Image 1 (cartoon, rainbow, N blue to C red):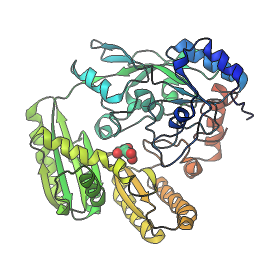
Image 2: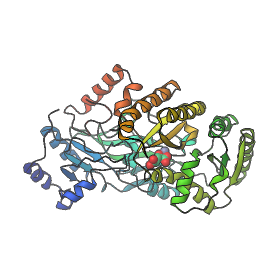
Image 3: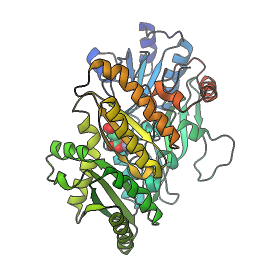
Image 4: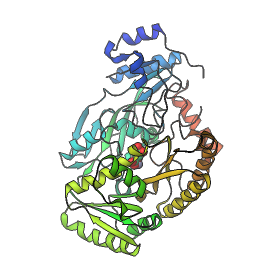
Length: 466
Ligand code: 2HG
Ligand code: ZN
């Protein structure tokens, strides 16, 4: 693609409908929009535009389409695959001011929001009306719903409630050419043509800019119990995961943490916790609409844990302990990143194959000499593998490690899984996509991309090359 850089005449056009404060050109500010939470990547945009109206997004896109200017949409920049980085320079289009909850509708168990609403804020607002929005990524306090839709973000509750995808009914989208469409209708069932709504979900901002989201809600399950189970062996912990579900329990969270992750997280946040209790942990939550429904579920879980050589089970007796256990789990990603240069993988396999995946990761780390910390959503078969550079030589890191990652992904495929469960492909997983896709997959996706975005201006170079 022959992309154009932004010129003074472009700026003059944007100034004709955006206020000066929504057009950012200052070097230091631009630098802030050149990063996200993915490793140490940096791509500075030429310009940041912060529209507040769908019509303005439409004008920007129509203009950029005509002039072949790259546009990269951005939410809160908490992504973990480099999806919002402007790799071809051009414009970063920030949705930060599309931050209103437009409607919460209890009679239909629905809400309509703008994409810049923060996930946790939305959860809290719907909960005030006894409704529930389950998807809760680790970054829920800062990530936006638009970014969540772009990646079909997950989080701990997916094992029972599914990912963002399962809650999106309809979207208002500005296409790369500037047209504005509704992808579907605000209904629970829709058998009307191709499902453009679900095509947009998880498309990582490559097909259109989401300006409104209709969300499905559930009744709020007001009661929950949280257990932290310690094991000597990570494999025993992994084997326990399908056994809990086989016992007829669907926990509202079923999370895995290895000892190092727990050590780092408790140390970083000065959390009092005896980290010698085990080499691996399962954090298990069950929820219900009545208190009486919790204990029978816990009893069954205790039985399964005992059968899998559990060493210790801690029951969170009060809210403070629940918060403490969740803080340990949710902080691992962030604290691991402070330790060393790292590469994070978001492996996912069928749940029952988790022990085999874990075993293979141990084999790879011994063979290739890397150190890694594993944690994640065991109930979904979704294990985050944080590979640390520590004292590895640059050559080992740059040449040997990609080979190990490829083998890891091949194993995921063999175990019925794929290379990303919730963090997306973006930029950093692109080189490995051929592990799971054949040429025909690329052709189909490239065809879709070209139909939506004939000049390839929207979030260029993400997921695959056009
Ligand atoms: C988690 O489950 C996140 O904690 C990963 O998906 C967070 O690595 C991170 O920053
Ligand atoms: Zn996660």
